[in-house]
Image (cartoon, rainbow, N blue to C red):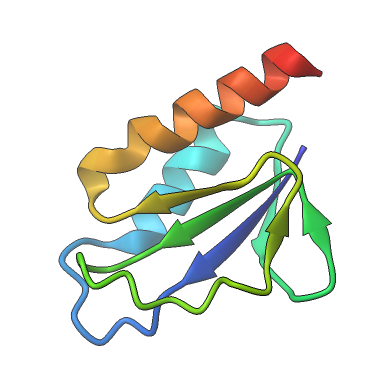
Length: 90
């Protein structure tokens, strides 16, 4: 499974967004995680917003199973649940 990561600009981060990615890689050993690029389709796009403004430009990023938006470190379960649900579908 390939996960595309999109970071916001980081102008006002309320948490360490990199820790979310580190936790993701640690929990799901078989994932390929990379910075999301336009023109490529990923299984899932994870938009890591540093605050509630969620200003990351993600409109041209495509995930076969959609996108998840993370606004705080407490939202990690959103990613985990989405990945587990995708794995059940495959």
